[in-house]
Length: 134
Image (cartoon, rainbow, N blue to C red; front, side):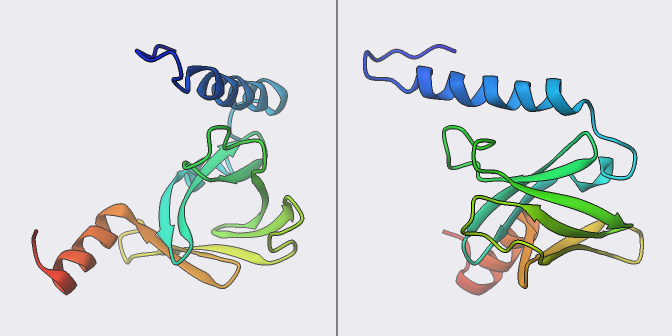
């Protein structure tokens, strides 16, 4: 981790990277049933990265310096359906998380505890349609 400023964020970013690597070391690579859950999704309250690790999917905030520290844990209960089984206490414990697929099988949206989240590409298209190119 490099920074060109004495007050740079290298230390905090390094902590975040180490905590992420520790999560993989503790839980292992993604199991087959969760491997297809990875991606970046945007919704009303910001952007969330879904990170499959071991037998769980972790919902993290890329805006945090240490995203795994307060990550929400999702247990996949059947294909494209999961349940929130761990969070920081301010989340949506017990709520459903599900992937929505197109006719060709591509994940197009994620419903996360009642909030629709969409891909960056889809969000970009919607914003350009709504507000035009700038």
